[in-house]
Amino acid sequence: MKYWWILVILAAIVSAFELMGGLLGAKSAPQQAAVAAMAAAQIIIPYCLVRAITELGKESPPKKNKAAS
Image 1 (tube, rainbow, N blue to C red):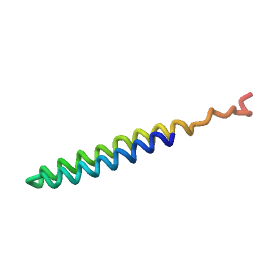
Image 2 (image 1 turned 135 degrees about the vertical axis):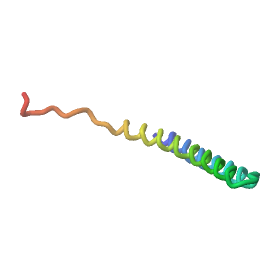
Image 3 (image 1 turned 180 degrees about the horizontal axis):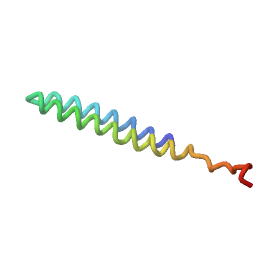
Image 4 (image 1 turned 45 degrees about the horizontal axis):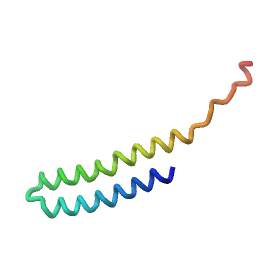
């Protein structure tokens, strides 16, 4: 599972560089907003995916109900 979190960290680093480069090249506020939104999406989507994978891995099998038997 740690492998997935390492990928999220790498995505964050790459996204930070893309954000800096995009903001330096943007000529208007809408361009800056678009760059910021894309950088945020590049972090949020992998994080949510890895979080879901982690939570699915934590599931335990259902317990048997003693009262029903």
